[in-house]
Image (tube, rainbow, N blue to C red):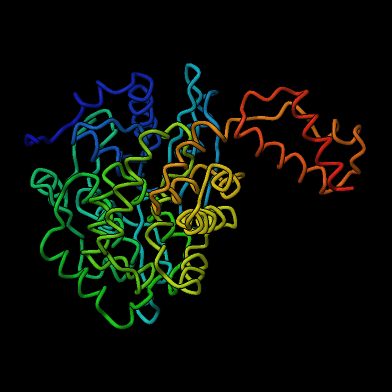
Length: 429
């Protein structure tokens, strides 16, 4: 990356509606005597040559005033949210059929109660420098002016540009991980995502915090949903093998559970899951939950439950993991055939099935995914009721048995299914 002090030329090459919006926000800011700056991941990614249109803006000194003015000035702009405690607002522009959200925040500083472990901060309005120093890493503490007289000019108070060039992840102060321990997960996520190194002192601070006795099972001491969000981002990275490797080597895994271990068997499971996923990417809603399931696989049941509780996983995500692990265990038994595989996997999500497939050598899982799971009956529950089956669980049981017969004989017609149904009804009588 070349040395750069102004990114106006880079901004001119983004989507024209987003660019026009940034220039208009800068003009309105000047009219109401506010200074507005583009900050965050969009600045970092544009400098690295990546696409990113997530607009985050900090305002000296009144984001709420800018939000209200934008809504008044532009009929295509609506106020989506406003949080007085944190001095933030969100507006949404409707331009040429696009919804463009813009997050606005007053420049602010955060103070932490040193008597508490990982507390939520007290937020007060402040200057730009104090706002930027509260951020996680130097590469995310860059700001770009939106004012017309210096539009695109970079504000780099903490040598973030040097760290971008040198591919370093560096915290802004030595208490950073204490103030917000989820930054430890973010550090390894950015290292894996960007193929950067964690800077030496930052690595030392991370190690010191991780190895501190008071940080054992740290996840129990901070809000679990915050950790879950970071784990989801981490385990959704395309470079998953490297991400999980750094997750363990850094010691950050201890935030999830101190008994986790990076063994060869886990490496193989992760690699296998990654290979399987390539064939099913369009069907996957939650890729990260597959990798989390494989990571906690060898924990005891009580340890797994602790992870689920601490991460605030909803019942659906817990079920996905449990179904996958249980199916993987069952499908390693002897004498598994197509019918048994079908019985084990039916009604499971694709995520659960991929967890199971990553844990076993059972090739019949592919047959289930590609063939048997797609076999449908022509006969219905209403047809069975007409044949004399009383409403209730027997209807489902008979349909399941007929479906199992059809797995071995996919050419069965509706008449064939009805004949089998009649036999089963006689057996029940």
